[in-house]
Length: 362
Image (cartoon, rainbow, N blue to C red; front, side, top):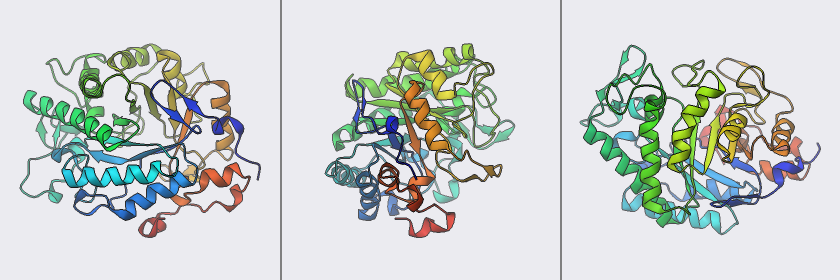
């Protein structure tokens, strides 16, 4: 097998982030942290992938607030014990030349109250998780202020722990994303309204985080058109709507957009080959990561083959300047040396991921 194409192996340099290559590890929830504290095994998991050549590790989602966690085994970004554990992980990654940022997360109505008996019900902009589906409580003004503070505090904690930046999770039907979506944000106050009005919650989170850490600390934002609740959902139906959606986030201080597509090789709008990340870069001028099926073999929902030459396709997007890098998910779950093996032309030796491997994941 031929070596990994050259463009993906070039360094990435921006005012807030310098990476040895254009390959990131996508954030993937593992649920391997008892009492929400990541242990030595979690540190080893991330270190192995840094040793394997990944340019940027984006951690699994880390809840910033007790109401924002999906389960007790997901590592938090608050609490002294948890933050001390993350500092040890950062040190492990840095000592082998890697870079690492946490994904800051609030799951909103996708939290399972059975995992947290006696606590408040899940919260969302309008008390629903998808159209017509009541799941919990409507966020109050005091709730919103508390969540803004939690994201800002988590960003400060990340900086203090030595992380190289943060990613704010605004995709896939979790709390921030539900503010974007007209069918789940029915508010008539300053946190709702038209597409631009519905971005206010996310923009204020970015501003709060930026105020907390200053202009030099890297803040990236993940967003998607699709949701777990609806794979066909579209926030923006054309480039004009996408530009209006992205402008408040750019103005708030996002350094890089992580644009989640289910199939990164698919064009986002008719009349142009650009995917979601390509359009985001064109409209904002900010660096972008693309993600969605890189070197994956098959989608589960709906079941269909992936692009056979997806790594070469991703490299071509980088070479053309359409995107600045790619995030790799399942392929790096299967083999922490994925980058190293591709770079050496040993792609046929890559160990492929299967769900059955989750309990013994290296």
